[in-house]
Length: 60
Image (tube, rainbow, N blue to C red; front, side, top):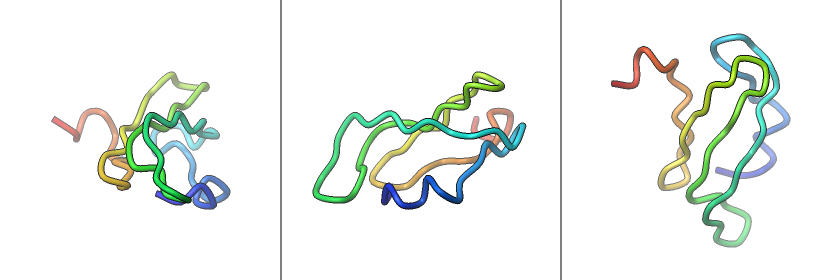
């Protein structure tokens, strides 16, 4: 996931702002990490550079 996406991403549950938490980065790509919503306290994983923005109830 490119950091520039943070400008357009919002929490799919409450539409609040997301905070990027990087675990692994390669060049300009975030390969592993998460997107955290401080408003509703949900976290969305980033695996293999792909953010999973499905609501928690649909991820299982």
